[in-house]
Image (cartoon, rainbow, N blue to C red; front, side):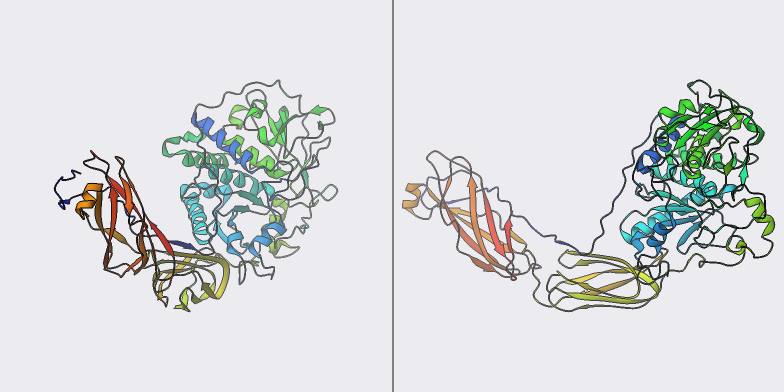
Length: 627
């Protein structure tokens, strides 16, 4: 600014004054953190992308030597499918978290419940809480609409609980659960099972259709030591030398990534299932038969095999740990090199998951390969059991089907009309009553009753822009939530949402106003330009300039208490002479106050910039600074 040489002449000072306006306070009550996987896109040809996503599923879910969600220990060579399967106790604890025997009912925690997929929908038995049904051996599991339905279920559960749910794919035995478990897992790695790209964990579950037990069915067929077996009477030749397998130029079945990687992997999975007719399903443990006149045997375990396993008393299989099969191990699974390929494992689960992935990559009988999995133990006849290896029981489906014309011998538990779990709940919980009431300056209660047990989610925004979020994931038919830490004199409006055991939502608007005086940051501003002047001849001679700053409080702002100018910074050598800190003053809503600060102006200075620091309190004693 130009400083006039005339006595008492008013000078106009242009100030670089910055005063922060407004306030946003965020209050979070009972928020559940969301743990999400990070999708890392695969590159290369379409075939390489499918290979990469299959490998990611194994790498991301396989827990090494820890049990994780899997059943049993992987310490022994005949390991159970740790990391890929849940056992009965684990799954029950997730759908009956309070242990009262009612699944996903009053008092259970929906946040623990997975999205359940029944992959053999022509039978009646359902695990309570099942959210999706398909028929895996008729391709219906992996049609675009089916995958979209599962994606919707994952989204609904995430919206209800604030965290990404797991997915559990179930059926009677490993040989049906394993392929779809693998395929869902591969699609999950693309981000294709959640709108936000989250990666759900994907597990299989067996014995899911017979009342959650592994009680054997008396099939009446010939068994060996209680195990119904299929024997390969053809000798298996020594493994061919490791060769580099040249995959098809595109994913089998004319699948491409034109529609995105998620649809590429989905299409490959649908194609793989459709190729299994006539030679047994991937991972089924059935009908080795004449196809294995010669072949290459690959031993895939859930951990590194402890020792070489001999087949037919002399043949040593190539051994590939499951977490290397889709990267360095692929060269050892070369259908072009032999007339048969056997994927063996300590249990049907990991073998079936691997076999499904290999089928998706083009390892088919069309190139001379035979994909087979689920060898639970080894003997001289290469016999394989359809049963769960750690129980010694078996379910030969052809024999059971023939005998189950009437409920008997436990058949009603599998194929009969007895429904051990309710059908899928397709009706959201209706809110029969709700209330939202303030109980003090900083507290309130929200109550509701619903037609069925449901969770409670509250989302509110205050008139002072503060926010309240509550998410109680426990299922209750009646619930009251106590809100604390609210702001006095604030009107809160928003939504009460309830989610039932299938994460179906119902909502209703709610509002209330807390008592007391509204305490929020006053919205202070400055009248521009300020008034600058020489107050006296002596001030002029001494270079003391007076500046009147007018501080305003917005008409929609609460009262400001103890407003002070606490600091000022200037350039060109100008310094504060007096008036800082200024005397504290109160500024009512819509009011203003003028504060004078004097500055020492060095000789020769004709202009300068200055900035202010201001402090104030609200009527609750909360302190604020500007800017």
